[in-house]
Length: 264
Image (cartoon, rainbow, N blue to C red):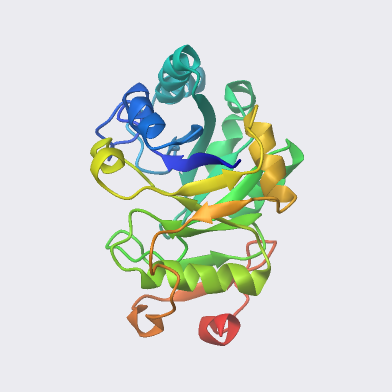
């Protein structure tokens, strides 16, 4: 038996772009056979609805609300709900952070100002992991693609927010090139997508008892399978990349390598 988990989900309490509360997703995911989900609301430097002027403790309490309400309902119905977040950097590149908790956030207000490298080292030191979300996404708010090859533990190769499947196919090639585990996530913002659309996620060989179990599954490369959908990983679309691409090392420095030569 395999257990299916949503890895990338936003709530309206915290993410400006979401329209569904955390708790309101759960019955729909249960109906689809999922065992649990991870709430990954947009963090401080992303599309977050929590005013940045608030004192840090108040900001963190507000930020965790979407997760806490989802977990409260999940506990009632026997559905696993875990905590993470999605942080954004200056070019518009995003990273999913898993394995840390509210108390860790309260103790680390400096997280707001970290570079990609500082984020990665601190998260790993605290027992978490960092996964690059939708690395080849192109939208008007993204100035360039950053392939943070040295500061991630895995790559999200399937993202439900993409209409252009070449973004996923390129992410798949990128993950294979750097030899990192791969995940899939719906990047979901409203419950109608669960009921009437296509959702994604990862399969685990055993039920996850904590977000720490998810982190260990990633770091030990023990993901049983990923839910990918049809045709998303068939390669096409290198010619569709219309913005600059940077490859960065473990110190968050631009390597100067050609991304096409690197990927292909």
